[in-house]
Image (cartoon, rainbow, N blue to C red; front, top):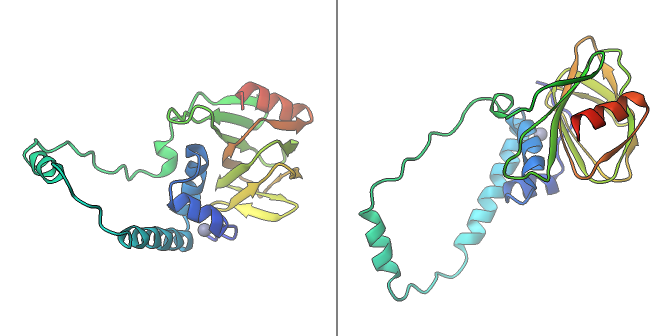
Length: 205
Ligand SMILES: [Zn+2]
């Protein structure tokens, strides 16, 4: 996978620290799953923050702390679920896919731990115009399949894009395959044009 667009170091550091809103973390995670360079960087940030924790002075173990730790050793082992190693797309909990125009569908992603996040998959067939839209807040996007082009260049599978409130763009699908993207947005998008308004209204995103 030829990934050309990566999250900024600030975003990767926030991801490593678990400081991103869950929906935004999901979109960064989708990029990292396919990008070994960013996986290495996130690992370095995690190691750096682990070293910072180790550098803290030891806590004063007083009172019954040791007794409580020893008591826990006698408790039955907790069941630990094996890590879910399926690709991210298969782990997403998707709401029903809604066709909002010929060749365009949207599926909201259930984020039970962060109901205020708006996370969704958007698929646009080749040749379909997308909605020129403005952002009222931050938007993260990772391309899962196909490619699109906007003022910043071509974004293909694995590429990551972040936009803020001042960005106004109209992506165009590249190639002959539908472009599927995973989005997280903060605030509602203001779409221009019929398809955009329909898409965002039907998807309730
Ligand atoms: Zn990357």
